[in-house]
Length: 159
Image (cartoon, rainbow, N blue to C red; front, side, top):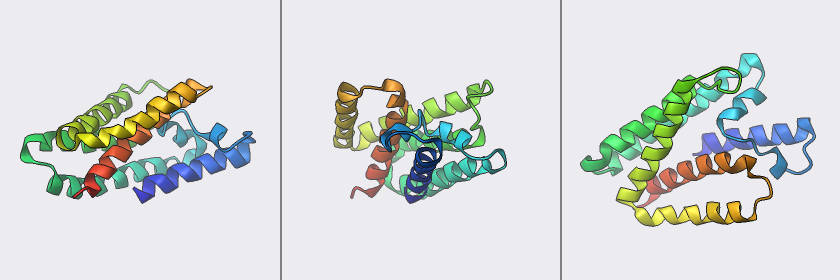
């Protein structure tokens, strides 16, 4: 959780500082994957490393916590995260693999939480509030990704 948080914050701060965005919130990217384009071409491997760290660090806590009946969802979610990291460049080239992995990861993560700790899905009320108040809906996908990760991290931390 710390790795992805620090990475995303660093990318937002870099965009805010160097691109001259008005406010910090204006520098929030359209998606977590789009942060790969904020890195220099030779440094885009960092996105892959961050996503792989997230995926591999989730394997053990999820496999210990998830009941056998929903373990396949945890496996698919982690496989999706690893796939997203494997094929990050989506804006400048058609990358169906990336989109499929992102969709599999997002959907299975929320199914996993819904079936095992449904009260954690209340965090989605934050998203509903955001969408009702937001003037710019171009950041919606970013917040969907953040909430998917947040619910999974919270699930791993619940007793």
